[in-house]
Image (cartoon, rainbow, N blue to C red; front, side, top):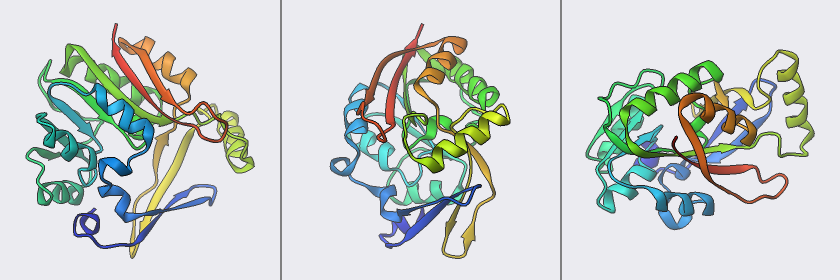
Length: 232
C-alpha cells in the first residue's frame, strides 16, 4: 500500500491454499476512475450521502468519492493502508476490522465493498454478523455496493476441484483460504468468501437487506459482479 501511494511499481502474489497463484500489479491500488472495471464504474453511480469504504486499501474508491463531494470514511485492517490513504489526502481513515465495526447507529448512507471485499469477513456466520451490523449503522434508505465473484460461474478445472474440496468439507464453494506475498512480506492465511449470486440472495434475506440490482457481464468465466443492496 505504501509503495502504491508512492508510485513504486511492482507485483504481488495472491496464493491459494492449494498452491494456485495470481499475480497482480501494485498500481491496481491507485487506479484512476477511468481505469476501473466497467462494473465498478456503473455501480459507483449509486453512491449517495455519507460513505463507508470497507477495505479501502490505498484509497482508490474513497478518494474518488471524496473528490465528488461525499463525506467518506475509509477503514482497513492494515495500518499501512490507512497511512497510505492519509498521505494521498483522504480526510477520514481508520484502522478497523470489518468484524468489529465501531460506529453509531444510522451513520452512513452508502457502504462500498469493491475488490471482492464483500467476502472479507469470512464465512456465513461472520458475513451475516457484518451485514446485520451494517444494517444498524446505516440510514433507512442506505445501500451497500457489494463487489464479489460468482464463484461457480467457471469452467476452470482448478477452481472446480477447489469447489468440490470445499463442498466435501461442508464449506461454500467459493470460500477460499489465501495469503498475500510481496517482496519479503507474507501475510497470515485468511478466508475470503467469493459469494455466488444465489448465496448473496440468501445472505441478504437473512440480514434485512435485498438485492435491488446486479451489475455483471453474464458471460462464462467472467464471474465478477457488483450487487446493489438496499434495506427491506
